[in-house]
Image (tube, rainbow, N blue to C red; front, side, top):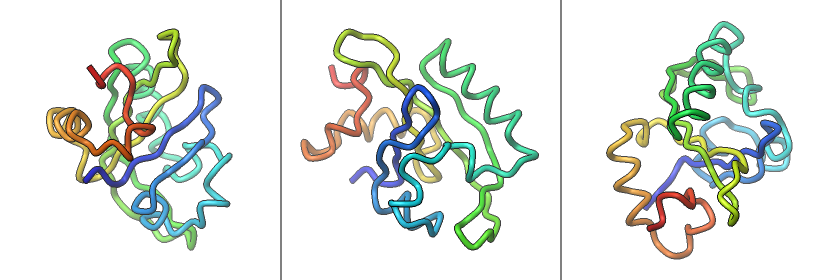
Length: 129
């Protein structure tokens, strides 16, 4: 089962996140939803995260390693995979964040292609076919 996923809008705000993602950072989902996706990344790693974001905008995928923060500001190390999301008209509509078990591109694509129907809203539309 696909776990550790969140969806982010074009303005960089969390739209939704599964329980694994939310618990990993110790934030209640009400605190995470609507906040900026970079808010959980260590300030020294923002440049690397933005490099991965720009890579994702060009190639659909971006990856980076970062030190993140839990709600209690405890540090953690994570590998993050960003996957571009598209709306029904195939226009850019934000991105998905996956970590840490999903950081390998091939494994993530395979897992997404086989994820259960109840997780379809979390699947990037370009991987559905």
